[in-house]
Length: 228
Length: 228
DNA sequence: GACGATAATTAGTCTAACCTAAATACTGGG
DNA sequence: CCCAGTATTTAGGTTAGACTAATTATCGTC
Image (cartoon, rainbow over all chains, first blue to last red; front, side, top):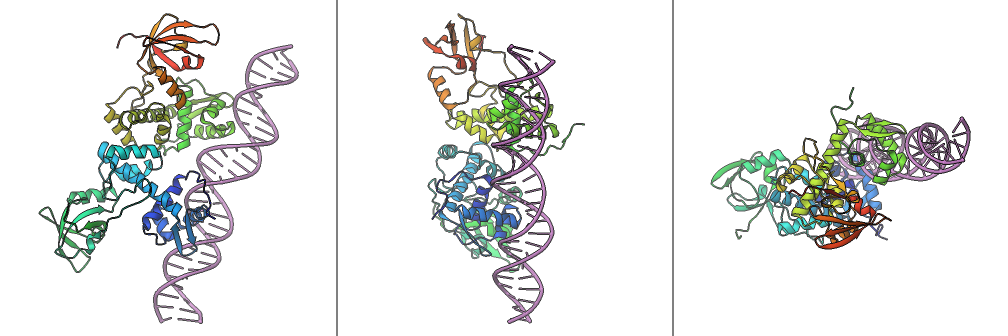
């Protein structure tokens, strides 16, 4: 019954939709129309329309008024885009002088234009990295992805020391700010204190104390492993 | 009187049209609708329609039934695309293991997706080359291009020694064949003989004799300068 | 169990870019 | 100088993907 076996190439916007849906719910929980619309900066009716087309093509399942979930085929296509995006980011940072705050926009366009060959050449030049400059894992070419268990800094108890493993942010200005605090993947931080209002967290980063807010503390994903 | 000063970004196909028109006539001679249609693999009416829109936007001038010519603005946009294409080709060959026969298709897609920043970074990594892997000159960022005087091999008199400077071909299979004959930019060849039928040319390339046909001898552009 | 807020969908348009079929203009030979 | 052949344009239609306005579902609250 599965439609569209001879998968014709996906369009740019189809690729964007699939990637967005995957990112809204890597675990496969249904994503809502309005979440997708918000993430892609489109109107809700546009999303409904596209979702209908994509479900006819077997890339996702749509239960009206309930949300959408990627099919295996859809998830494979989405992971392919995620792999491309993250490898391109890693390549641009490593070889072409990009910094982590400027690389997202460039990768966002290139991910639709590169061939599989080029992606794999870039992966080779990088030595097949497992994470991108923000610490996000790079799916393998066969579509498997290894999410390592991590906790948002907002959930780390006071007194604990953790390592930042991923920084979930893509706006250049915010990323520059985060970098200015000394925060990036691999850095060790200790939670010193937590305020009872606004969820402010005081942390120690390389002998300096920093106070960070709710949104940032949720964007910093950490691991406990002191081993390295 | 010139329309569209605040030039909104061009679409992919507009970029393709402008580049095609430039390539059909770098000197600015009018290009015909059907030449453009043939080069872009589109129908003639499609070209007429697009040409009308582009002339309204001030990118070219169209005299119905007579052909089109790029305006300054159009030529600038076209040269920008040519620069991108050739720099991308050079970069992929230099750093990512591409050979001159495979690089065209990749560059054809990437040229629409890269930012000006990325193009200039690639140029920097290459040391600001003046020619691409096929020997074609790379326009400068400010839109000037330096075509060096050259003659098609088909027009080189018998007995003369020349250097191949450019290879005007983009089909992978043909490029592999050309490479297999030892022909590429920079190589010295001597015209040994020319047949009175079919314009076959016998040349000497690195102590080997090769016979080449009409189409190839026209695609090989040569310079006389023995100086290097 | 009705009701209002919010989310989602349907209905109806619009634009860019393509197409085919038909009509029109140019051009070279008799 | 007319006419046939070719090149070009006009007419009309399609598709993908977006939009706004209007309608319909769902859900939490009283």
